[in-house]
Image (cartoon, rainbow, N blue to C red; front, side):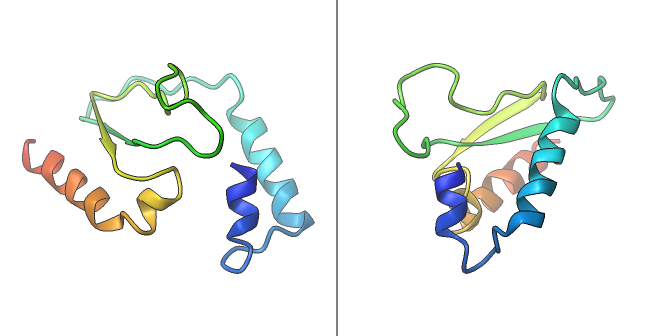
Length: 98
């Protein structure tokens, strides 16, 4: 993921302050478990791994206690960039089922 972030340095600066903030952010969620929610929830996951990950290997995708899970085209980053249209459509389709 860091390689992908550095490739996007033109869009998001990866200077020391941002890296320190990201480290603290990750630390805050270490071991945290979300409480149960009374409202429907959706986990939108990337269908393609980043880097040298075997796409058939278990455990590379996000895991979150959601009521529904949808895999959309792209990686963690491209699902919100090049594939933003299909990602938005997947969310709209889910909302329409509520």
